[in-house]
Image 1 (cartoon, rainbow, N blue to C red):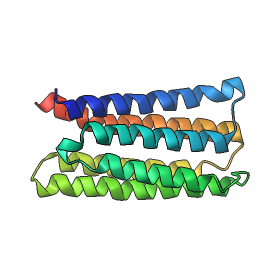
Image 2 (cartoon, rainbow, N blue to C red):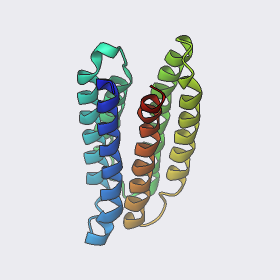
Image 3 (cartoon, rainbow, N blue to C red):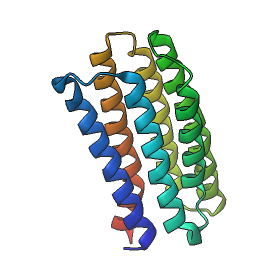
Image 4 (cartoon, rainbow, N blue to C red):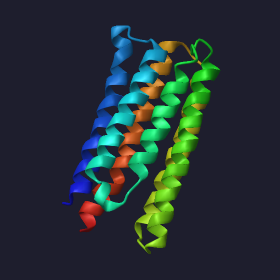
Length: 172
């Protein structure tokens, strides 16, 4: 297994664990959505920066794009109170849209190299965009439900991200 695949798998597994932790948080009455959203965006930015540094020789800039997007949305989210569910939904939808552009760039990279993985990337891109849209629509409830919905979103996002390195590993 190549270093890039190992790093991708560790980062994606960490994202799944973050999603599971978010699913459990309302049980312990931890529902401050502003702090949770900011923390997750910054943590995701740091993880993707580490991923980019460890795999920069592969010339894959998706980690860098993801870091910039997550850091930007996380910092912009500090200016909102998230008392209105629309603000959280807009932040998640903005993040999903920008991430879709970053994933589309990588899909185009695979297509240019005549790699069959671009078909799988198109599937995961469409699934991610639909998941982000559905998550944004379902954020209009109380904060404990918002935390669970975001937890499910990040868990599923981690599973979708894990598909790429797992398929590469199984095909090699």
